[in-house]
Image (cartoon, rainbow, N blue to C red; front, side, top):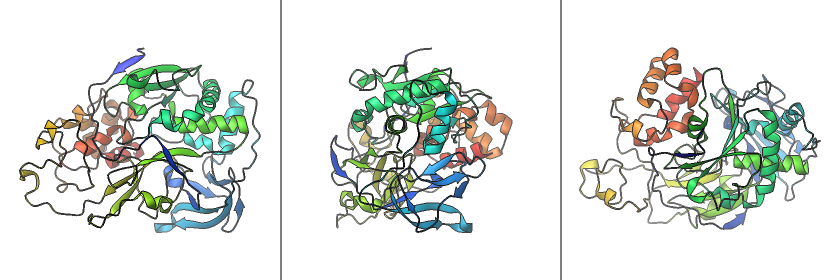
Length: 449
């Protein structure tokens, strides 16, 4: 096992609008949403009613198949609405927050003497067990199954991702507590990966009782799935657990304060962001709370797309939507609703980014671009180009895996590495795909199958 891994495949997308390292606003939540759709394979059962008062940490949803796994309110207030979509699918529970947050006290065991059963029970009762994902599949794990190991990515390499060393610099103590507790849940230890370029300056490199690794290379070096592949790959029949640094901080606060406190510092980013910077908020925040960060220049005719998360894997939530539980940034892009005369054969095109040197942009490697959501063409037949392999630093054949999923061939899917990936690990394939194929949707279908 190597403690330093250098990746050569991948792609850093030069997107404009990186957040400056300063906190410019603390959000008073207003209307907050708890969305079961943030959690794959979570079958929600409603535990509250409209008009009912809740505190931060009050369970509002439970999994029908595993009722001990719950989702809790991040704020105190009154349940405003139970939002449903087509066929009465539950989309969200909205809560009108109080000005001052009241916390539901949670009984917690002592950190040093806590057993595995006590830790798991406390995490499920508090709602934080849902913050853990298992590989394969990317779902909430089975608490009865001990994972091979637990993996945490200590940096994010996605486009305009927040600097975790800045956003979580005040949470180092809580993260240490969480690592000590999580070590009791697996014999394989807690693995934390940091980027080699800022390893020494990171506040996380001195975390005790964690197995540290360093990675160097372009995105997706910060994806925990890529890190697992290079440290301890997931084989058929094996299970590993993953979570992010924000979840570690929340678990630490739970076991030191006895409350469900999921406040976090997130980045507001993107080409259409005014004063891109950091804000302190809670999951489920309404996008209406960041109106002043949206650039609505009269010269810019294109509307703004609000993305909860990064530009590759985030959710298009519109200006009336809410921040997802697992998302740590908001990305503001222009909607690409326009037709460009001559298209790719138009000369020069210095404002366009290309990985294939189709434009002269390759002469300016450090230039950043105001990319939008225009597909620059329609969906075409899926053809073998070899471009997927150039941005996938995993020893699999992504094109062949995608074709096996489309064919519904489970044996080939298993042989080609379906257990090692979830949607985010092949998101770059979708970005560079000349056929405009929705790769992440296909991967999701394969995992569902």
